[in-house]
Image (cartoon, rainbow, N blue to C red; front, side):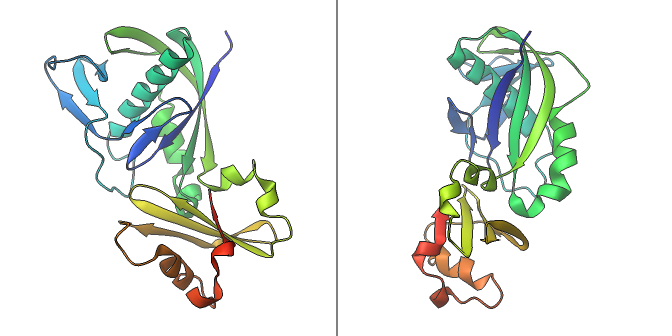
Length: 219
């Protein structure tokens, strides 16, 4: 059996795969809800996925919400690909640049659990999924692998990953990531003052006036 590779973005605002995107909220029930649409059944409970959104938490492994949303995302991706519901899966997931090294191992263990295969129902269909491996990548920075032209002949590029709750920043000097510049602006809101000014003020020795918009690459 050839494992299916599924990329999942575990955002605070939304869960995203290649095929689908749905809000990252989830509500659990001890009884069957009024509809089985977007409903995950796991270990005797019902979870309506895509209802509302997550609160901003420092550690996404602090409860099972993101694990349950991962199962829903796997089911949605398999459904859209018309693949077998009994299969092996390799997950490719990301973490914020500023906390990648600190959270990498814990998030991998959180998703790659000993209980294999994982059996659950999604929208009343039975799934039997064996998660063979979990690959972790820095969010945002991975996209530059597809667009190396953004770095060509640029002495300094500021990578900005705009999410639902946070904006993650990293500066690349001569195409090399500068780990000391990793920042995460939390509780981001569009009505706040220009985020380019906020981003510029986070980098020592660089004022927002010195950073023209051409330095910003929106990935």
